[in-house]
Image (cartoon, rainbow, N blue to C red; front, side, top):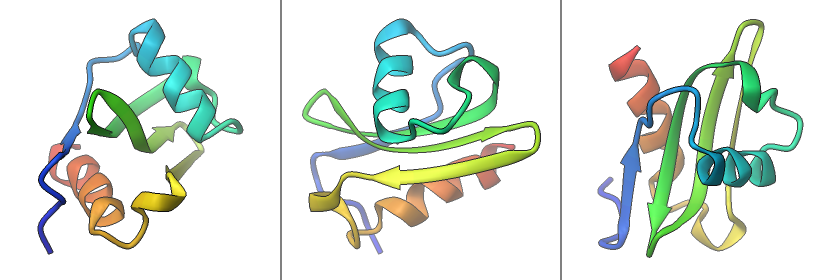
Length: 84
């Protein structure tokens, strides 16, 4: 399944820049965003709409409600698996 035209998935360098860290914390409030081992973010129109975050001992994924079920979840997971 391909992503919607406006969406791109990226693996930003760690530690996350402040704006990306804030967006990741908004999507995944239980994740220790200061201690990530890897991250993949989905961006649409300049806004972070999804995140797959991994840290020692855990991982979590969240996609904004309106974007779910459009292949973004799989693309986020694939970005971490393929780039790990």
